[in-house]
Length: 507
Ligand SMILES: NC(=O)C1=CN([C@@H]2O[C@H](COP(=O)(O)OP(=O)(O)OC[C@H]3O[C@@H](n4cnc5c(N)ncnc54)[C@H](O)[C@@H]3O)[C@@H](O)[C@H]2O)[C@H](O)CC1
Ligand SMILES: [K+]
Image (cartoon, rainbow, N blue to C red; front, side, top):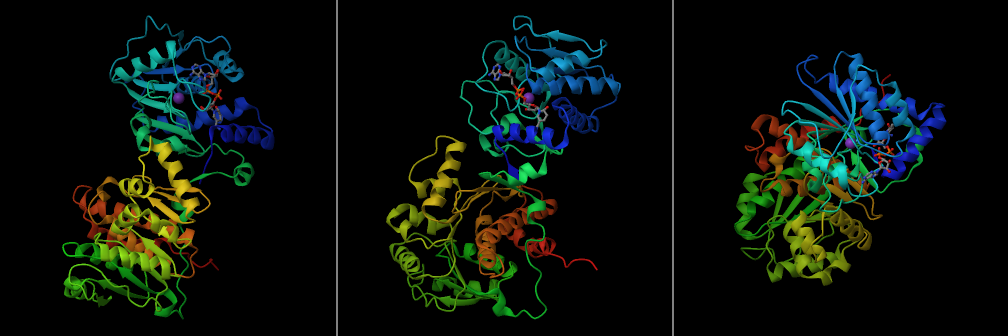
């Protein structure tokens, strides 16, 4: 799914009006109908809960007025409050006129704001994608009043005061919505941790914007949901053999962190790899052989950490990092690997910390390497903290472009940057996955998919991130979020990959 900017959303509206030959008021009616359908499925019967609709002067306010009319038609008695405005939009004015006389419409007076009972439902239709500057004056006072009311707030399209795709100034008030109900495509603002307190739970309802326009519009950001991923994994041919799915090498583990290498190895095996060899310090030899008997184990001459790079010839892809430690000798192994490897690399955890501590190694990264930092590791990689979440995304884009790599920033909506700077936001996963070892599982899974020659590097990465999150969602259904441990994810990799596999066309 594409993520459009506010400007592109306006263009999509215009393209839709032209392609369908409808008026902007008709499109607004469609948005209001979708919103009301969503709301009516959740509202108690009329009369049980007071509904307040706050409308701004633009088309977001116009949506609010159309919603008020439709709720009235459904038997509810909303109160509408409008911000005083010198030049309301044409569709606001039209819907103001269409508002039945039984629906009270009052102008907001910042000095005498309406009292809001805590059990009220507030619909925030003050500002949407047309917000052009931080809120001040009556609008700012009203937003603070709504936030302090304790009422449940549902925002139309965007919480008022929040920009769709840019940071807001820290002193500008923003509505703290419990739900944000938007139209057609998600907005970048919904996906950033710094906006979570304003956006609440979010939903995107279809209003059938012109699909040709959306198809032809190039964007910097994508949201990766089930529709994008399902069927991306080709079915296995009846005649495939273990060579088809590649022989991979995993360099991992150090004394006290052998578990990380075991989790990565198990995930790699469940990810469908043909053959797996693990390079591990001698202390981990027996552990690996018993915990992952399907893997071949190459013990390092050193007991506690990896000190020697094995012959790389047999391998279709190589992973390095889980539990690796940051010894000097291990850093030399990484340096040699970066110099010698001519197959896809997956780098995680201590391999990234070593890169961060030795930035001279970064230019050695082979093209299309896949790196999987969490925000702290990413900060070490780029060498400076981000000002905010938007700035971090720009750092991520720049990093991927500069080193021609795929770089994953792990977290809620884990974000993949491709070498051309495009960002892909993953939609699966849950807070239960914020637990030690879940990154090691991701590394193993990505390594298996990266070795699968049938998948492009982009597809391998997108599929791996999506499947990892979905395995986490399945696991959490059984264990609860708090009870989830990384090993639980491994069990669900197989079934999840099966679900995402392409099915042959029906006869
Ligand atoms: N495709 C869709 O998703 C559809 C969306 N619709 C709704 O339309 C709004 C966007 O409407 P627009 O008129 O462009 O903008 P707003 O209503 O958000 O606000 C514009 C209005 O507000 C003034 N303004 C801007 N910033 C401030 C400020 N800081 N303080 C005071 N006033 C401000 C500006 O001058 C304008 O007067 C979208 O979000 C959807 O809700 C359509 O209904 C259908 C299709
Ligand atoms: K709004």
